[in-house]
Length: 240
Image (cartoon, rainbow, N blue to C red; front, side, top):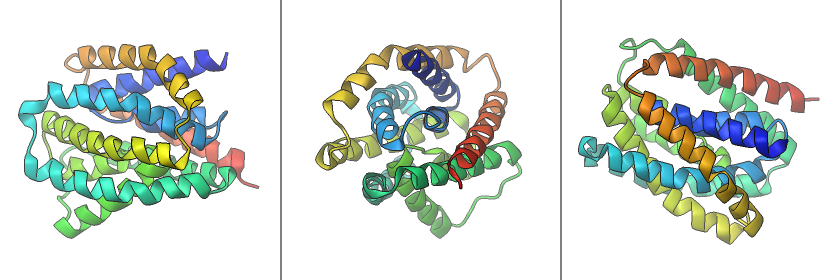
């Protein structure tokens, strides 16, 4: 029963990623954290998302801009390490409360943001928020904050997908060996992730196929509502 739920959640998450270029991790973490600890979820998602990020980077490679993805990748690669250490040492209940707050706030930001209405933030703010996003990425495997920041810098969706995927791939290259060194990536975690590869592949394939047939904004809004609900439930279920 748990595996069937996990399979469905991963398929849904990677469908969103195939369409929008991000969003798999908060859906996966937000729903599955209701039943499992984040220390069991985040490493699994990193093993799943690594080939997905490579696939999206290759697919949209002609839209890559070195000045955009390289700086983001370097900051993310440094910032994810403190996030992993927090994941390794924080109390699981406190971690779920924090995860619920982060997911709900990110979902609310996605839901309330209007296309074309946002202003480009100053460069120092982009760099600072990229660092914060890296820490959150290390904690929960969630890159939606970075996507929100980059979305204000990169208006074109294909360019956003390409450069976000390259940044996430760079983060994965650091995270996987760090997870091994900290003992978070075990044989059982690896086998669990490998068993979910069909779900990841199915969701990503369907998302890429539907990307040109459904409005990205519609998919993002549906995902945003789901994130807010998941975040609130996760917070309420672990407070008190």
